[in-house]
Image (cartoon, rainbow, N blue to C red; front, side, top):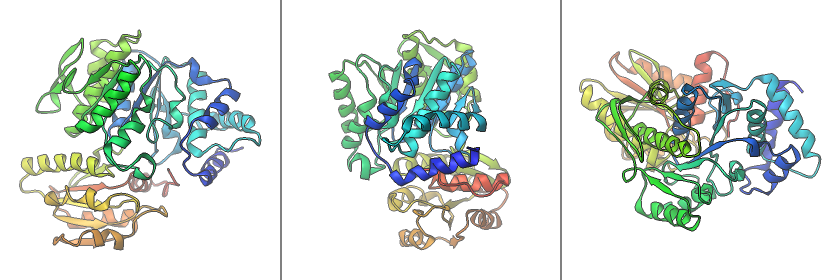
Length: 432
């Protein structure tokens, strides 16, 4: 099959929807030789921040001279973004060849989902590539996520707990913590980031039942500082001063702390990282769609925030921007999925926003501009509408002055559409 045919085949698997469970995944992996069992793995879950944390971990490990696999989701523009070795995406030919191997193992008895097939592809590729470490981001939840076939990772991390994907994970932070805590393994250290007391207690109970050492942000490790340059990491066994975080936003300092704590834990399993690798890896890390700047004058940022907790983190960045640029305005280009908490997302942002441009991603479950406008019944500032994402960005650019800030947020799918159009390659396909 050609690469385009393979991608069409994978997207067709979305007819199976999201199936939380590990039985199909285990059977599938067993038929292709259980490639995951040959890998040394760092497993990262959480509501927000897990992708950024995974990127930081991979960057530091790569700067330590290791061959590093990185598996994340969703992609923004190109499917191959999900699977990388030392920062390079899997090639089209490798996708063709490895999917053919997986399909041959399916026969007629299995109905894997899109994510199960993609995860099997990642395991095969990392095993064939003989990576020293594979950094895995959980797709959805943890307990029944396809990545959770990993039996003995070097260490795990759960970055945050917040309300998202409630239809699958539960309607309270405690219920969601229970699902995400499923990646905690017996006797394997777990790093816990910033979260509410109830969620923390759930994770601690799971860890205690599994004799898993807990390293918690603010108790066992921390990142101190007032600016992205000059940060100090105080860990369980190590201290690094004058660090620079390559990702914008105060919330990334928590993610950086979790990344370095996870690497500390991995060091106890023989994967040690030197100080130079920590400094260079953290300073040079990049992660698309997280306060990513794509233009200047006016400054245009892309941010994948799509739930209330992430909106509060974005609001923190807006607040700092307003303090440091008192004569500048913030224009928000907003698009969101229909099944997300639109009111909970927009509420922390509107105190800092001067104008809003409503738009929607090219996906059937995107909220319409009419649905978004209905959420803004208490907003009295200017609201504009442009159904197509690039038209919305054009509207914002026309309204903005050179010293203003335009932020496009609310959906990773929306960001993918913008990035694809900016690259001139057309709008991206379904990315769930």
